[in-house]
Image 1 (cartoon, rainbow, N blue to C red):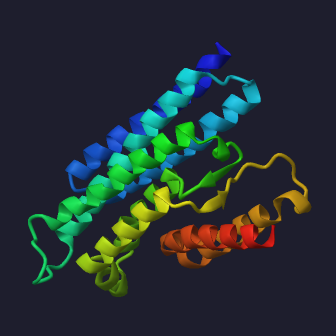
Image 2: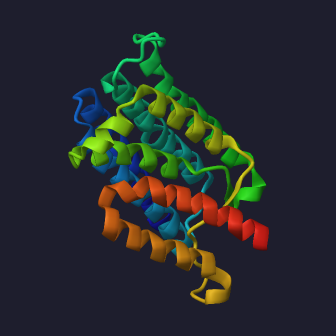
Length: 232
């Protein structure tokens, strides 16, 4: 029975992603964003539960990637598609084609997940931006827009900004960039100083900026990972 519990949690991740897609089709991106967050929680829990129960399996590994490609690949791609459709027109861009560029995130997410499954270097850390982090970044944009800040509308609903964000995130997904994992084998400062700093700063940013902190937290994650590598 124990070996099926992590797979059940992974299926909840997949289910959350499917429901998020429904809300995207209804142009209700805020609800979809919340479901991306729920899927990320399930994605974290399935690995943690598998470690606690010692319930690793090959089918679990494959199921996890299949769920992730929906929740953290198709969903952010579709969300970016909808944001690009809503963004203000740019005269020199073909408006009917540009929104489909959002699905570049989906393609690179699939490449990142396929690479992860065969890359033995990523057992305790990551090479390239994890797909949940990319999806959470994209999902934060509708939540920031929902705050009603005029500056948020001007910055986020700009096709050039959205296209640049799409390309940068897609590159980071497959970049040879070592990033630390939020896996605490113990609670000592020496072994987890960067993780403690990241969690502390993230809580402060969320308290100060609410949803607007999420993109900054993803950037902070990358910066701290680079700093950790340089000081290692």
